Length: 348
Ligand code: AHG
Ligand code: MN
Ligand code: MN
Ligand code: MN
Image (cartoon, rainbow, N blue to C red; front, side, top):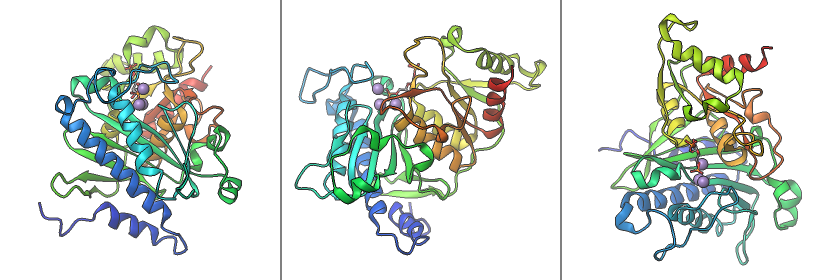
């Protein structure tokens, strides 16, 4: 395939940076390190069983098997991917600290590496229940600016430094390890999608300005939780299921991949609405997905693509976080559907 009329990720980032003549280039360098981490994970995923990284941990070289702070048994690839993210991003001097689904406390930038002005928050492997069945998984990341006193003093980061609303994100994105590997990101100026060229090992710009269609006939929800749904969610799904003769006057299609990244990608490509709403399944968990490294980056991407992301009650990007691993109800995708679901939550 000829590249003559296509940009690479590097080229795209340089062009985006021209909007800010005084920018240092740190953000771009950081994003390229994140992209490299994603390429490395893509290779591990592609080797599958041959790479000895599948399944539950414990049996060979790649460690895992511990229970993470979420109470989930870590897959080998959860642990390996987390390690790749940490090792590939800690040395370059762009970060003040990192936080991840797989680490209970924030990771410090160890000596002798210099500390920088950004915070990197990530879910290194999303949809990890899909690994063993060879279905798409992904990585999600969010970049925040560290508080000024962290930047000035170079002190260790603490949880509170990360508790910034999603609207404060400087950049966010995901990689999807599917039939092709893609990187989709936003630096706050729309959403661009890059396809990994398998021979060159470069992310090539293939989807320059992704827009989520405002209307859809496709929804995604884990229907096995229906007995725990709140009334507005029940109403919305019932109306979709009623089809052409119901109140919506059209038939809907349903999908559930069990990998939020893959669902987000489908919605960016052709519209749709995704719901993992707050439910009554476990009163200690107000939702399934995690605010800082799942809901916020995907919310940022959706809003930048003209879609919408909500808790069901309010825009997700406006929520002030209270904990690093806090969970939240999440609804995102085609704008008019998300607005309808919010309306149902507000109606008496
Ligand atoms: P992770 O693999 O990072 O722990 O996240 C899994 C999440 C998300 O990707 C997906 O949408 C959801 O969990 C799947 O939930 P169900 O198991 O209820 O289908
Ligand atoms: Mn997990
Ligand atoms: Mn996840
Ligand atoms: Mn994960």
